[in-house]
Amino acid sequence: MCHAVAVPVEHRPPPGLETFVACAWIGTTTGASVLPDGCVDVVWSAEQVVVAGPATRPADVPAVEGDARLGVRFRVGLAGPALGVPARALRDEEVPLGELW
Image (tube, rainbow, N blue to C red; front, top):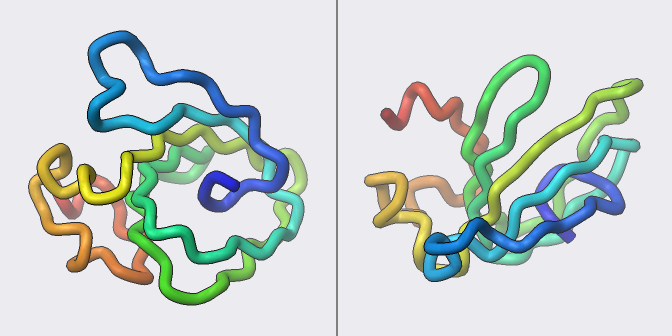
């Protein structure tokens, strides 16, 4: 399951990005628990764009009516080169993208 959504719809990455990107996804939060998967996602919501680092423990995502989210999931181990920060620095964190760039 992609980060911070329940029952996401996944799409193949655009041509040329397959090396770094596992999928793009869209979903709506429904008050889900997200299990750790070691992946890093960039997540767009109505409020902000965040980088969700690799999780080491389950996380509860609160339900927000109609809160659609879009995301890009990096392949394990490849987010660091794309984002300019080691994935381990993002472990168990959600950091606004603007703070990284």
